[in-house]
Length: 282
Image (tube, rainbow, N blue to C red):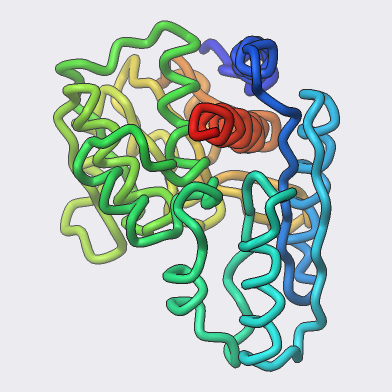
């Protein structure tokens, strides 16, 4: 089985980012990472994003707020960041604490600065196949992994396990745009094994540690594991039992070192594209 490492895909995206930054009139963009509280997975993603921005020659600043900040205070602070001309793009780490109305923030964020596809305007564009809207970075990262490894998508049977607005739903639209035949599964899918075994490309995005093993994978299938979980030994693992599919899958992404690395690279690419669009406007 071929292991599809994220670092190689990330390096290709870095070249695309450098090409955008080299265009006349494009200023080095600044990313605002907005975090409320100190959830370990938020901090982990924040560290990865900061590291990636620095490696790609981009600027980034963290705006951290206490977990108990009021809805009103957070909205006022978020509006300031949203309207700051020095901020090219925004990454909002979610979910937000319960006292903050996340829906309101999604509506507030400027679609031009919304790099992770949370604005209703950008989501609508993704579903309409309009490339002027930024798709959620993780969903786009899955497509980038397949394309960078020259894995054909058109005409393929793709099964996605997970129906969130972060991965499952937007990814199904991105796959349809690439002319795949898409099945979206979830916890209530009858005969989940059968639906997964039917796939030539299987994407695991359910958020449950080692949920899928060799029984779910057809001979020669390509497996993309989006899950980031902690197993019983405290180690990072995906939604796929990686060791069990070594003899079955033809290719698979590891966790860690797979899709996560590409997700932050896509974020950097979106930031560079936002800077380019800004320069074209002016």
